[in-house]
Image 1 (tube, rainbow, N blue to C red):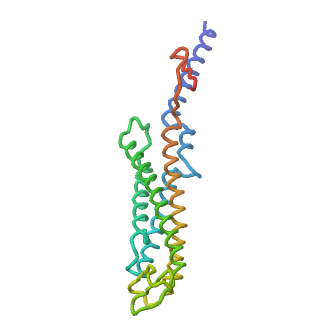
Image 2: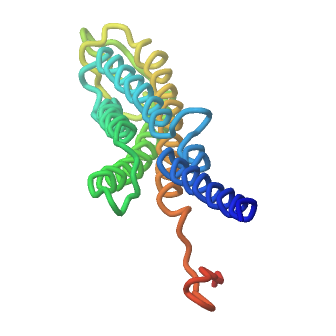
Image 3: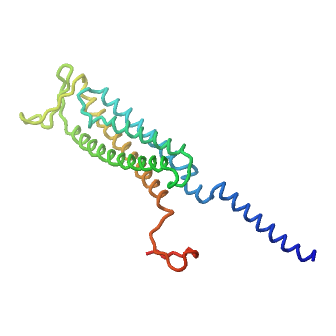
Length: 233
């Protein structure tokens, strides 16, 4: 009798140990889920938000340097607003990184932050594309300028021989080389920075979408409900 009860106790102990191990794994979280939340060794909101912060600061700084050349530059020529918006998006990304990760359906605050971050990343992508279009236009325009200094102003025209040609006046500029050489360099730099900014926003929006929907799929349940058999359609 004693030898007969030993295997049963051993099996019971094995089941208890297996249950304890499963419980421990459930408490610590799945390694696969943790890896899915990482990108290049870092949790993806942190990496993307850090890049957005650096690019936003760079875009704003270059825009303010452009304003320092002449106060006559339009807001579309000096896209500091695009950099400021990207800084706000990055701050939201840092908040998302700091939120404790629980299933979306059980955390309305986390779901709202993710949804807002996805929306702002999409908006940042559109804004960066608009900035690139404006910068390309003004970059090509400045290379067609023919400028001359008039006191504390620099007056530029597209065709100096045409009396009715469109003219552009830049106040506070005593050296027109700042308009025909320095300003195009800033336009080109803004194009590169906003292109990088658009790519980062696209990656951020894609990762949020993937993290939210990669664990779900549409399908039809077949067979017994307890068997958990699904067939994709």
